[in-house]
Amino acid sequence: MAGAKMTDEELMSHDASGMLGVLDAFPEQVSEALEIGMSDVALPDASGITDVTILGMGGSGISGDVASVLAPLYGARIPVLASKQYSAPAYLGPGSLVFAVSYSGNTAETLAGFAEARDRGARVVAVSSGGALSERCGVEGVPLFGIPGGLQPRASLGYLFVPIICALERMGLLSNAMRDLRGSLPVLESRRAQYSIASGIDDNPARRLARDLIGFLPVVYGVEGYLAVAALRWKCQFNEMAKIPAFHNYFPELNHNETVGWQNLREICSQAHVIALCEPGLPERLEKRIEVTLDLIGGSVAHTTRVFARGSNTIERLLDVFYFGDYASVYTALELGQDPTPVERIDELKKRLAG
Ligand code: PA5
Image (cartoon, rainbow, N blue to C red; front, side, top):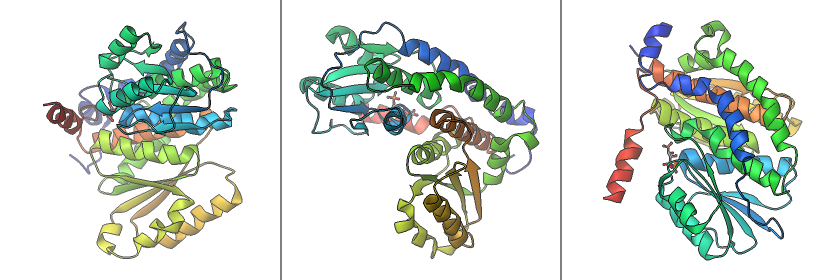
């Protein structure tokens, strides 16, 4: 069936575990996550915090990338960094605020970082739907944002990152981010109307892009800041939803290496579909780089496509471009006849590592 044009019914028959429905509920997820973030979880003392670190891997870890790009735009004047490894960063100490984020609560790297952060006297907060992390929080009296279980981590972004933003704002480290999150809800609803399967293919850019991607390797380029995180997110969603290889990079850094790399291995290069994530009104120095780069590499790759994030502030644009990528990756999966939900290799890997 892959490659043929499928009807809506044929496409949906591959969505055995209902990922499209989960994506359709994303605006409600963000709204509920705001309530969770505003709930009466007692946060650590906010005085003298020198740095913020978000520990987490994969679908949970992306919440740290999102928080780290949003925080400076909403007033953070201290470093806010994501950490995706077993070891907690060496700078952690009593002045550090640490978020340990694990959807399952059982991720080995995050649990190791959590323990190390606690040993170093950092002020720790967790976000999880259960598992060993939630248990340890209960035993050790660590504040926990408990989020609903039963989803895939990569389909829980709202639950995972919104409480972090709320906590930072409630602790006086950010301002106006919750206002913009609330304001993004009607925008997300209007994007859902456009990206969901109910919208006809001519009006649905996520579905059209998925069709254009069949048979090609997605290479997703972002731009420094939130669009670089969006490029990472798109790449991971193509990997996990569609089970295809995908790569990402961002401007301007990619101009100093990867731009040259499209010159040889012509057959492989000609399989790539380069997607440049951008926004209207980028600074001229970045806009020009995108235009010149796509022109330089255009003859070596199969396709180049530009996707523009839409919205009146960074949170709206970030959520828009993430939402677009989520749907595009799920439609790509379904066009390939692939159920987007299971990630058997991750499950198998975790099983073998635990055994
Ligand atoms: O999408 C996935 O399933 C993975 O990337 C997980 O998010 C990752 O393995 C970490 O697990 P968890 O999110 O439960 O901490």
